[in-house]
Image (cartoon, rainbow, N blue to C red; front, side, top):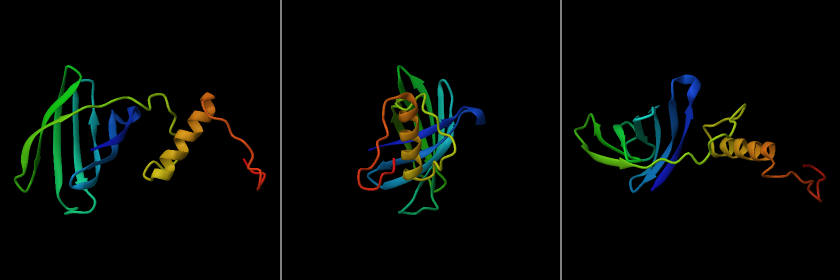
Length: 126
C-alpha cells in the first residue's frame, strides 16, 4: 500500500495525488501544512461516489489521524510521508497522467545532470 502526492506551494500547500490499498486505487486532494495533513480520498473502481475525509496531525514523524465518510464509515489512521521528489520542477506537463509525471521526472533529471540524452542509433532522434 502506498502512493504519491504533489504539493503546490503557490496554491496554499494544496496536494493532489493517488493512493492504492486493498480496496483499489484512489485519487486524493487536500492540504499539507507543517503539522497538519487533510485530504479527501475517492476510489476509482469501487463505489467512486463515496468520499473519505482524512485528518492528521504530525507526531514524531508519523501522521496520526482519523477518517470518515457520509455513509458512516470512520476509524483511526496512520500515515508516513517522505519528500522523495523534492526540488524537481514540474513545469508544462500534465501531472494527471503517469506519462506526464514521468516526463517531468525525466526532464528534471536531465536538467540536474542525473540523466543524459543519447541519440537512438536506429532513428537518430534523442
